[in-house]
Amino acid sequence: MSETDDEAQTSREEDVLAYEIFFWIIHGMSDKGVVKVSELRKLYQKAVMKNRSIQYRSLQEMLKIVNKNLAQWQGWDAVLQDDRLTYVNLNEQKTFKANVASETERTLGVLKNALMYIFVATKPNSTHPGVTHEELMSYMEASMSTHPDHKLTSEHMELLTKQIAPNARADFIRKGYLAFTKAMNENEEEVFRYEWGPAALQTVDPVHLVQMFQKLTGVDATQLTEQLERAKELKAKQIGEVKVGIIFSVTNSKEFQFYFQRGAVLPTRGKQI
Image 1 (cartoon, helix red, strand yellow):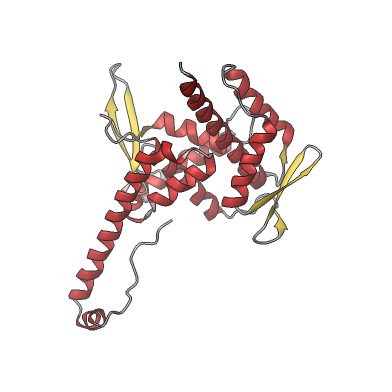
Image 2 (cartoon, one colour):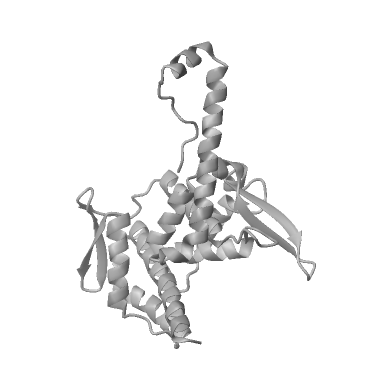
């Protein structure tokens, strides 16, 4: 492996670790209102021990990167007290408390996280598009867990499977944000794969999610060129469909046609998340 290849691999592994630390802090603040540096150190050491060939930056340097992203994306400013990290919301000038997110906010966060991963991880030219059930659930569990083993409690896992599962009763399937397909692999085993559902394809801003992924992980933007181009194409299609819908509604209504001819600004349909 060349020096350039080594540097690229190190960069990718550091991006992954920064992403894990970022979400560890997000969920730690949501659940407990505080993050222990000792827990972050265990997370860091686990990554270092997993692949000794990677020359990671120090934990302190990694935290600087993550805290910069937290400040830029979340508006959070880190406050260190002994082994405890807490964060101040710069927009509201107050410290976070545990369980501040409403049920709706938590559900929306889970949905965004799932859609973001599916879009970024999907290989459009693959024979089997989308991501497998195992891949998605493994990612969701690792990104949502605040435990050193990256596992969710049985209670949290049960809640997650009510939202994401390969059946019509799962919340995100039922509401049209996710769609799934079933196929058989070479071992005659069922394989379920997830893609964006019709509701997501019509109303979710893919560019925002790719940009959010880049900001959260610190991944070099050049590594997301294909995903960003695909996101821009989908967003252009969404905007085109909204315009067609508006024109159709307007041209079939004398009252709207009157305002449209005079250049009135009409509201777009479909709130994007």
